[in-house]
Length: 269
Length: 331
Image 1 (cartoon, rainbow over the protein chains, first blue to last red):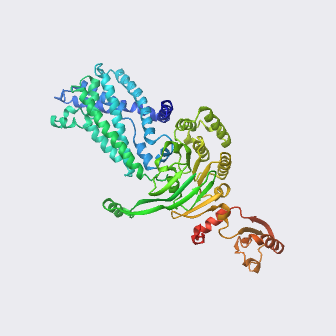
Image 2: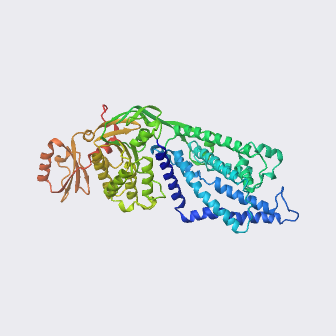
Image 3: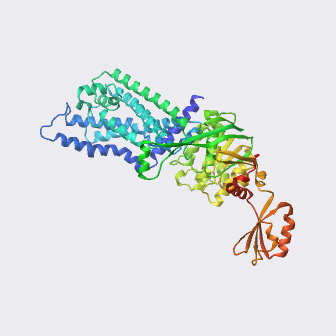
């Protein structure tokens, strides 16, 4: 199949993803404004009150300003990397909707991957707007020009990793009737272990050394630190480890898909 | 165009006892049973045939269709559709077939039909000129030209079904599978869809397999009927052969000005079913003696209306579902 024909399929699918994303105006507005509102109403207030307690000036090297800066970048990384909703994917399987994709000459994973890319384009725009919005409120984000390209490249890998994991969790619907519990458990664990709730410096050193071999720190902590220009580890190693986990996830997703589709019953067709 | 040999599919079904204790028990020990949805099915369908796949709910019609379209993989046996093995799901195969599901939308809910069509144009690699022509012709024929830019979720069921049909034949498939395409539609919409399907099939000489619980669909569209009961093929033949299973008799309904004597010996041989305070009767009259018998009745009784049966398929189907033993063994 020629490249032009194939890319037309992908770009058209991405356009459909945009239409789908933008169809409900209020929903889209919440998607854009939600994270900023959560940041200002919850995280800002929470950390401000923690740091206003008597005797608390720094926590593991973070003062209020740097903690808030850390939390802003956590929000941006989440916007860039963690946006794709796999609930739809699991629902497609459970309600037998993937039947359509088994008949169209453009498969299920292609459709979802193209939709994912489409969603990413919107998320990048939302992220840039969010950075400006936060800056407009007077936050100094200390964007590090040295490490920013690496941070962006890292976010691309992290988004692919999240997508592959979302795909695997969604595919579990071939065997399980409900998969949202799995997703919620995974997201909560990932939130804590990736540094999305609190910076990883809070954890004991031995635990952090262990975490370094898991995919978690690379999902939030590392790209956040790169954006802040404060990553002290070896960037090449970080890239190697996340690439390794990405490869593993893609392989598991492919294997799960092949196994699942053989036993698929197209419930309700 | 379609051939299958000993095609079978069995599912493992999980059974849960009712109530809380049943729910708790199933956490530890699950009871499964195997169900043969389709059992050693043999079928040959040639190009240009319009085949009605009939059977009650749960008989295995949809499972058979899912196997023939490659949605599910058969447990055993072989199938060949348009020269391909469906379970391999090869792209050239997918471009030759289409499936319309009356119960499930294949179009994207949140976007206008036109966006879906453009997407399908890319997926099926339809050239711009051909695409525009087909889209124009089909939307005009189905009367939906002014609805192309409306979101699918805002369309009525009948309008949506027309869009589904368009979406499925834009790529001009060789084989079309229709799974209850008129379900839930009002009488007019059913008729429109039926007429469209009939003329389109004739014009393009495509192969169509249809399942429907509306016998009017089958009566007006299918030239061949395959009956499936409990996963097994029980009848395969032309529509007229199907209609003759119960003998060459016609069902005639008569209405009277006033109730005639129902004990008259004239009725006894015609299996009369009286209704409406004996103002109405349904009779079964052998085709060979129909003229004479009717003439006698019209002379002797105060008949004000005669209705001959329009839906022989429905009557046969109804009888066979109640009394499957009437199905001839050899078919």
